[in-house]
Length: 504
Ligand SMILES: Nc1nc2c(ncn2[C@@H]2O[C@H](COP(=O)(O)OP(=O)(O)OP(=O)(O)O)[C@@H](O)[C@H]2O)c(=O)[nH]1
Picture 1 (cartoon, rainbow, N blue to C red):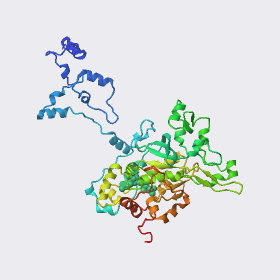
Picture 2: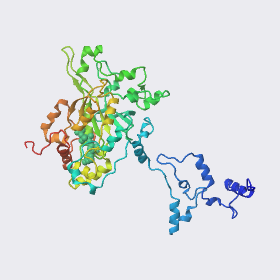
Picture 3: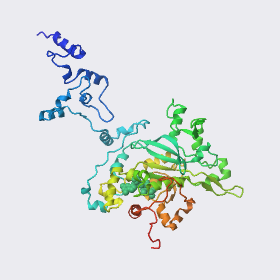
């Protein structure tokens, strides 16, 4: 049988269709403007590569032509009617993604060995979240049993996922100087390969402004990952822009932490007791370990100034206490006592609402207004009393040379009333030499005898005038008292309970 290789008539029609050299006529089999698959669109789509966006792949072609005015688009105006056939047609042409959102895919990948988490830390975009959030049961589903026996450990979902992941890595992406009412601090922004949050470290170490440390002075608190060389073609300006500089940055002073050679390691060198100068003065042994705090995000307390909790005050108080000058007592008759600048760090974790997130915390507040305490409200919403983890905080501390288990870093003193935090740090190998209590200002001002607990810090309790949340004074109120009492009575916080009548 003879099969014609081509049909001149249909070839001409196809050419017209593709080139648009002729306006569509009644003879045209597929009128150009009404084409089910517009050839120009197909060409553009093919040229632009596979249909992959950040969150989905395999989108239908039709979203690109939904604007009726766009060249070659489907004529959507004919679907403006409300009859049944129009509705069906609309549905058929709906914007369709054949892939689940990225969050869900990551959850699946985790169960298959966490493949997506194996990618290296990226400066441009943080690494994916490690696990899918467990679906919360509704309020009505919360049983009395759950309220009676709340789970106290880390969520199982988090534990099992973390067990199967690559080793935790953190990387300091940038650091900058921030002046505060208590003195300058260095704010460090961290990325990690466990979650997509930007956790932070607020480092207090103003001695860094005066150049490399003296042999008998404590080492500077600097990030190893920030001071590292990131790439062979990284310029001095790249390093300075991300904060890898030494001293005080100014238009006339811009020394990258890479130059001169060896400076970066000299800046972070740990206390070396075999160093001749240190043996002579013995000063370094008398310097107390840096004071640190692991703090969890609280938008309401820290930004809005909420008096339902003491979080804003605690953040402020931590920076204030760490910034207090340290007096080193005289080591011998010939050497006088010495004062050095306060040093330490607040690791600021983005674990809003003890890890349940801002939305749930806001809902929990409404349950609290109905008479429930903070713990019960969390449980009623299907959360645990506390869903936080401290692995990332420990990795950040290690990156800053603090509390390293291998003896390469300094041990730390921890500002907290929460025994879980101390336990978590020690479990991760951080050397904690002291827990320093944080007495709420309102309790201190109303119960002066509690101040004795902080006397060892030798701090001046004066407030900074004119400052609001950071540097502000003591606040108190019914909600705050209730919150603090629940911490002591239900969460095991080590804090002498404030009483209306101290004699009770
Ligand atoms: N779920 C919930 N979270 C709250 C509430 N009030 C404050 N928070 C959160 O509790 C966390 C406070 O934690 P931290 O400041 O680290 O301190 P802590 O665990 O109380 O222990 P300390 O170190 O002794 O202060 C923050 O994440 C707040 O957002 C509340 O009523 N409900």
